Length: 150
Image 1 (cartoon, rainbow, N blue to C red):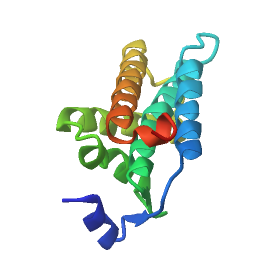
Image 2 (cartoon, rainbow, N blue to C red):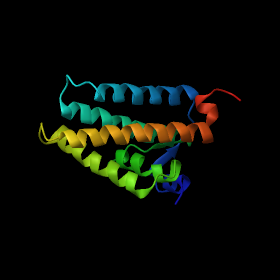
Image 3 (cartoon, rainbow, N blue to C red):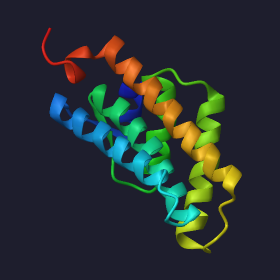
């Protein structure tokens, strides 16, 4: 499967990016990771911030490849799943992100106070790892988007 094939299916649409957009997305990741570390707020909100950072990392990689998700049900899941095609993430990482996504949805829409300290720590760790992976991948594969022109 390829991103181009996903676009044929209507899951993505081709759209060029810019260094400014990638910089802004990475700035959101940093902000959300900073928010996730603030112990004065609830573990639920910290978890949501960590998950948002991970999802935004996924989006930065997708945007660097010149695509964005089509606005439809499940587009956040497609962003996460696209990591297999963008940074060649392994299935274990994608599975972790799917689990975190379900927890994030339950926390946001069903009930407060259901995030354990262990789940919060895992979300923060996964987001930091993904931030590092995407940043490294960008430097290796799309340096013009993060380092300026060669």
